Each structure stands twice: as C-alpha cells, then as structure tokens.
Image 1 (cartoon, rainbow, N blue to C red):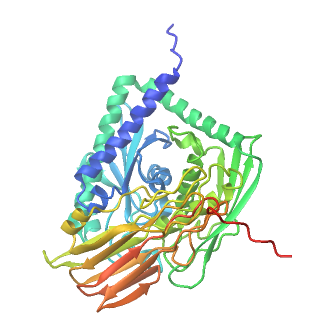
Image 2: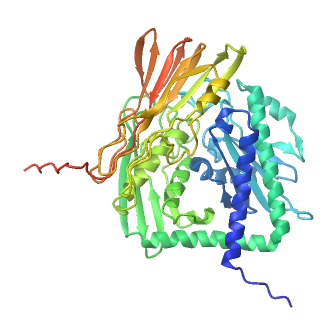
Length: 537
C-alpha cells in the first residue's frame, strides 16, 4: 500500500507561484501581440487561472476591476456551454459577470488526455477601444445598454480548434475598427493557447493529483488567512457614504452607502450597501460583479504583502447589494461608467468606512476617477476610421506613513498612460502638454499626490467623449488632512475656452484642444502649523 506524501508548505508556495506565472505569461503574450495601443501600451487587460469547479486559483498583476469579476463570467460560461477540447468561449455581457461592453472575456478549458471533464480553465479579459454603439469608443453617455455597443452572451468563438467565422463576422460588422478588433481578439486567443499549454506542462511536472491537492490547500489557506485578518479587526459596524457628482443626465449627487459589520469571534464580515441610491438613467450604473470586485480588492488590501490571491479570500465575506441600485443595476441600464467611475467610488466608500477601524492603515481618498477620454473620427493621414480610448491617472491619497504618489492610476485600475510617442504615431493628435498638476494634492502632514495635466490637439475633426467624476466633490482627506483638488476638463477652440461637465460628448474641429486636469489625492493629517477650529458654544 502506497502512503501519500503529505503536502509541504514550500511545495504549495512553489505551485502557487507557478500558477501565477501562467497568468503572468498569458498577459505578456497578449500585450506583445495586441494591435491597439490601449492593450499593448496601456495594458488594459487581465489574465487568470481557474480550477475545474471555476474557482479563481491564480491571477496576473493586472486590473482589480477585471480580476474580481472574471469568476462570474467563467461561471456564466460553465452554466451555458459545454466546452470541449479546442473550444474557446467569448462574452462581454455585464449582466453575466462582465463589467462593461468593451471588456471582452475569453475562457478556454484545459483537458488532460483520456479525461472527459476539463481539469482547469484559463481566461483573459481585455478592453477593446470600440465595440460599436452610439459613440466612438463605446464609452459615451448612453441611456440604455443597447446604445453602448454589441452585447455578447456566452458563445463559442472556437470549436474544436477552428474559428467560428460567422460569429467573428457578426462582431466585426458591428464595430468601427474591425481590423484592430480582429487583431486584439486574435491576441486574446493566442494568450489562451499559451495558458492551456503552460497548465499542461504543470500537470506533467507535478502530476494532476498533486496539483489539485495543492490548489485545494491554496484555497483553504487563503480562506484561513482572510479569517485571521478579520479576527484581528475590532468588532463593530463601520459605516460611510460617498457620492458621485451626477450621472450626466439628471443633475445632483448619487449616494453610495455601506455598512461593514466585523465579527472577530467568528472571523467573518458582512458588507451591506443598503441605502444606496437606485440605478440611474445615465451610464454610471454598476452591476453586481463590479461591486463584488471592489469589495474583493479592498479586503485583499488588508492582507500581508505577497499573499497568494485565490477565491478562498472572499469565503468569509458576504456582500449585500440591493437589486436595482447603483451598485447592483439590472437591465436595460447603461453601465459603461459603472466599471470605471462607480467602482472607484465604491472603493472610496469602503475605505472611508474602514478608516476608524484601521486608523493606522487606511489612506485618504485617491483621485477617485479614471478620467475616461474617448475620441473617434477619420484619420486624415490614412482616411480610415480610428477610435482612441484612455484612462488618465491622478493623485494617490496620502497614508498615515507617507505622502501619496503623483500621476498614478489608483485602486480599481492598474493601467498606464499611453506614451506620447505611441499616441502621436497611432492617432491624429499632437501632445501639447503632459505634466504633473502641481499642488493639486491636498495639504497635510502627508500631502496627497498630484494629478496630471494632459493637453491634446486634434489634427482632424473628431467626436470627443468624456466620462469622469470628482469634478464637483473633492477627494477627501483623513485625520485633518485637506482634500485634493477636483478635476477639470477644458476645450480650447477659436481662442476660447469651455469647461466641460464630467460626462458629455462634443463634435470638435481640427485644431481644437482638450485639456484634462485630473484630481489630486487627499492628504493625511493636519498641515504643519494648523490648529483646531474652536468649538461653537
């Protein structure tokens, strides 16, 4: 009788890092082979590995808003489709685990010889610079999801290793830049193939039984780690609210409210968004997958550095989001901005709630917006359509230990700004100015990070769309620190300036300029020399 060797912690760690390397290599392959600057330069993509049951077991160092929601897309694929060897599923439906329509997800099974059931799954998600709809870039102020682009349920793009050309033709017929979309989709397929190959190599190296045992140990270990973190928190209910400026349709703030109940004795937590405002006519509605992603991200931030992230982390955390609210919207709500703007405000609200419980750890608010800029038109150099999409960085909130970083993407995004050289090569633009926005970070013991200034001149007529927030309400400070400066967007044309609202679209002529000044981060602690205001009697 053979005795099974017990699992060794070092072996579990080795396999955990090996699985992470699979996700990382998938991302690298996608980046190297993508056509669009948004993917190959800005790295607006994510990759992950899943167990046979669909549990997240490894992820790349990518986009938190993608990674937290991707398991729900994988679950939708497994519920709707029977995947065979060589199949690759595709979807972008926000109401099936997606985020917004430009984020297209692919899922591929990993089959072992002689096995009828997939042993693992690999998946990636990438933001495509256009998926049709009313506005170039598919990130405009729509009123319903049908206006935002093509909506794809779980379908098979590859069947037995062969492309479904009819499905691909339908997708490409509904976008403005079909060649670029085909190139990016092909890059995603190649990344899936890399993932499948590397997983088969891990099975050959470690053995399937041993690998599965280590995966289960990783899932249980992640759960124990999170329970230990929750046990270290003070017992209580921690509440906060924060606001989006507006939805671009109806003026007035939109409230996100949360109550986090911590139970150290039973090592669990409940995150309840009761009291949050209902979904709105504009495009900033967040589906449940986004809210789940934000909670996953914030609680992951509580873990020790280097902790392996798996689905086990969220087992002790329950998330309650009222159906039909801004944090759990239902069809046919428009959702383009929920992924990029509402997700950031959910994080801000969660952080604000946890600040009294963890005063030595929680930072002040970061810029709180992705400053989404989309531009589309006909490139006068080629006479071909183009669509440009970019999220623009801002200032990080200061922490109890240090100032906030300047000019960085924060929280739910983990992308980069498009380099000037790549921008001017790919698009009919000229960069007039690209710099830090000095003194936009809040003043305090530790200053908030500064935002940036990005000033573009159009070299051809174009439609420009902005989807941004923190234009009216500043990123808050903590412990007496001052807030960061609010953002501002200005159009310069005919020697006149026009300040734009946060969510709008404009038709502009060649020679017009768009200047985005992103928000700074909030400060932590009172500024030097500041004194408390006398209490009112």
